[in-house]
Length: 123
Image (cartoon, rainbow, N blue to C red; front, top):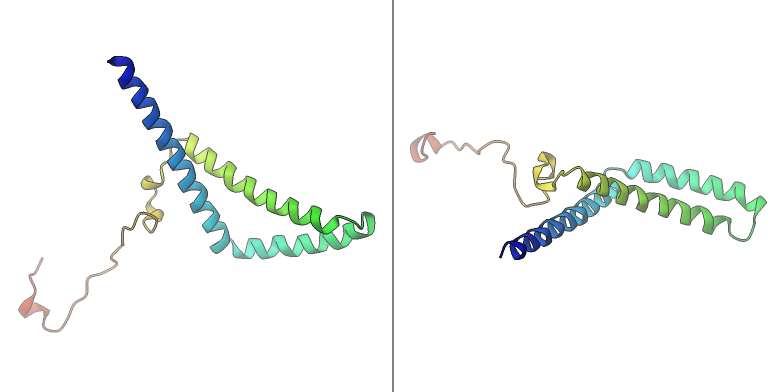
């Protein structure tokens, strides 16, 4: 009985870790594409210049090498950051600025209408 419960608990914990890792990977990839757009433009510019420079040294695969290197760098950065956050135990539900991820709407202020003092309940 005890071993069955500990096995279940281990499976639940590992599934929670995998879920947290996948959510962090998705969130960081979206943030890199949306918020990090200037960084992506800068990396593309540096990549173009680097491929032009490398074209004179190795004309066959300079563009492929630079493009592959930039893609691998971005993927590894996202996966590494997601892994670190998961291993530290930071779950996406605990992060305040990720309310958009789990459907919680932040209400900035309540609407007040002219007829509200007559018809609305005052809090």
